[in-house]
Amino acid sequence: MDYIFMTDSSCDLSAEIAKEINVEILPMEFTMEDKSYLHYADARMMSLDDFYSKLKSGIDSKTTQINYNNFINYFEPYLKAGKDILYTGICTGLSGTYNTCLMAVKDLQEKYSDRKIVIIDSMCDSVGLGLLIYLAGQKYTEGVSIEELEQYKLKVCHWFIVEDLDHLKRGGRISAVAATFGKALQIKPLISVDEGGHLINVGKVRGASNVYNSLVSHFERDAENPKEQTVFIGHADNKEGALELQKRIKGMCKKSIICDIGPVI
Image (cartoon, rainbow, N blue to C red; front, side):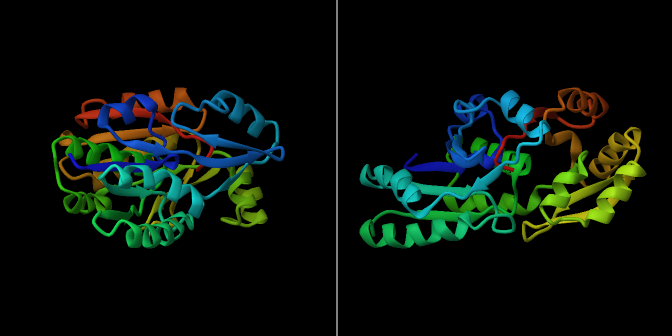
């Protein structure tokens, strides 16, 4: 293969899966307690246990997009070596990273006019992006062309439940009043991702026991040929919940993979 397949660490793929499908994951930066960290697939600068422990203690976390110079530094060595590049990362609906990447690519393309650099807006993020990369990565290892890989991005379905409404309140996704009443009534928003890569509220789930039923119901409703599909189950420091959901969909799909949601998303 004469091109390099790249994504960023918002995809929440493990280092093991990244190696398996031969994709390079560019680290993204996050800040806690006025200190910056790069989040790699192996979480080498801060473990996920430490990250969630800090988050639960009330320490805020902020994410920074990959900047222009970093994209130049990541891409240029491969272009110099005569490789083409395919990059798809965090979607435009959630970050300005894609547009920054386009600016870097424009300048690199002038310098390396004989090389092909394809940048795809994934319309996905977190384990949805991870699933897209996983499926495309399998095709990549089979020698599929760059152009063919873009067809998969609008086939990924995302559904997730948010346990702690305070984070949505701080991010401006819901009002303080909605967060207060939601917590009092044990109402959890069911959130999806639209075709523009934006987070959208598609329902409300009341009570912990209904969370699994709702997620399974959406899978049954929307999945095409479910017994032929791979499902990614992402969790934010809730391995027990992920295992329970995995148990409930056993036999309904070809394969399910549990992923840790990292600091970026």
